[in-house]
Length: 118
Image 1 (cartoon, helix red, strand yellow):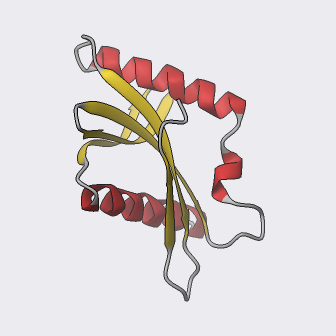
Image 2 (cartoon, helix red, strand yellow):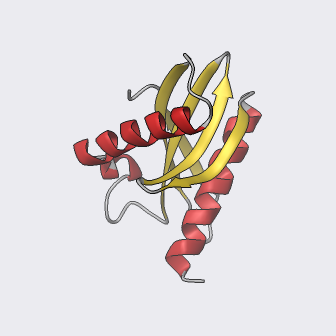
C-alpha cells in the first residue's frame, strides 16, 4: 500500500476514534456509490453526520481544512443525499462535518473537528 493511502487510513481511524470518544455512533465507514465515497457516516443526538476526513503528515502543503473546496462541498451534499436515499429515505436531520488530522511520523497526531459546514 502506498504511504499516502496508509496515511489516509490512519487519519480515518483516528477520526473515527475521536468521534466515538465523543459519543457518536458510527453507522458506516467508506460508504461508496457511483457518485463517490463518504469517509464516515455517524449519528449523534438524532442527527446523521456525514464526515469528510482530511489527513496530512504536516502543514508544509497547507492545513487539511484548506482541501475543502466549493466543488468538494457540493459533492458531499450530493453524496449525503444519495446515502439517505439508499438507507431508506425518510426525513432525518443531517449535517456535514470535516475532521482534519495532522499525523507526523514521529509525533502524536492532532485532530480538529469543524461541525456543520453544511
